[in-house]
Image (tube, rainbow, N blue to C red; front, side):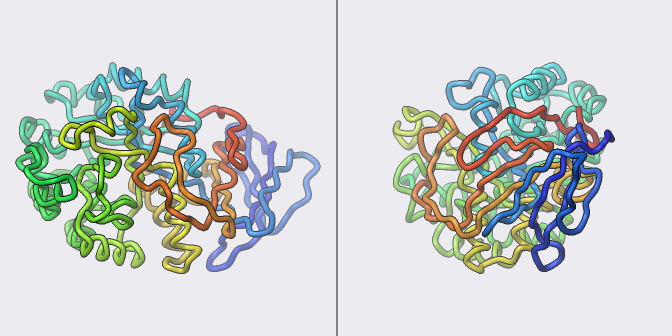
Length: 427
C-alpha cells in the first residue's frame, strides 16, 4: 500500500452506536489506518463526511445486476447503469452474463473486463454463463481472477447437465442460481399477467436447490432473487446462501397491472409477500439484490405475453432497505448485512468490502436518515421502474468509490479509477 494521502471524517456504527472515526486512505484507494475520533491532519487532504443526521456506512454492494451493453446498448450501458448504481449508494456490482453476446468464454469475458474498466463508475465483478462444453469451462477456470462466479439459468438445466456437473465437481467458487425448473420457466403463460406465478410455482426453486446439492461437488451454491418463503430456512440446512429482491416483499400479484411489474420469477400472491417480508425483517437472507434489469419504453408497453421481464431497480432498492431501518423494522446490523457485509461474503470479497477497516477498499455510502423522497428512475436508460412512487425515508447523499467522492447530493462528480474484482483478486 502507498503512503496515506487523504483522510475521511466519518460517523459510523462502532458496535451498537455511531462514533466518529478518521479513515486514512492511500493513493490506490485502500484504507491504511482507522483512528477513533476526529484527528487533525496537516499532511492529508481532509474529506468531512459528518454532519447533522448523516451516517457513513460501508459502501453498498449489489451482487445481481444486468447492465446490458454490447449489442443491447439501447437498453442500458455499463456507464448509464453504474451511474444509477452510485445514485443508489452502490460501490460494487455483480454483472450477470445474459448479455448479447452471452458471456461464456474467456474472449467475451476479456471484452467485458475492458469495457468495465473504461466505462464503469463503480468497482465491478462479472459472472460467466454456463458454457457449451467443458473445454470452455477449463479455459475459464484458468482465468478465475477475471470473473467472480458462474450463473445458472433455468434453460441450462435442460441442455447442459454434463457441463453443470463438471463445474460443480471442479470449481469451488461462487455458483449463482436462478432457481426455476425449465419445464415451468420456459413454458408460456396460460393465465393473465397477474397470475403468472401459478404457471411458474415458487416451490420449484426448492426443487432446484435440492437437485444441485444432490449433484455434489465443491462449488458455493447461491440462490438469487428467492420468491418462496421457505427457501432461506431450507437452504441454510443445505449449506446454500440465499438473497431476495425488494419487489417480492413490496409487491404482490394484486399490484401486477401491466408489463412494468412483469419479472422473473413472477411476483407471488399476498400471503407469500407477507411471509417474505417477515423473513426480511428477521434477517434470514444473506443479501438483498436489485436484479436491475432495464428495458425500453416500447418493449415494456407491448403485449404482456411478449414484453420482456425485468425493470430498473438499482436506484430504489437501497432506499427501501434504508426505509425499513429508519422506520424501525430492521436493526442496523441487518441493514449492513443486506447491503454491505452479506453480499461481500457471498461474492467472496469480504477481505476488501463490507466493512470500514484497514486493508479494505475506501468505498463508503453516506446517508441522511431524516431525508425523505419518492422513488423514481434518474440515471438508468430505463424510463421507469415497477417500484416508482415508493415513499422512502433515508436518502443516499454521497457515494465514495476507492477514495473518490463520485456522487454528491444528486450529482455525479467524477468517474473514478475502478477495479474489476474476480475471484480472490482484482485487476
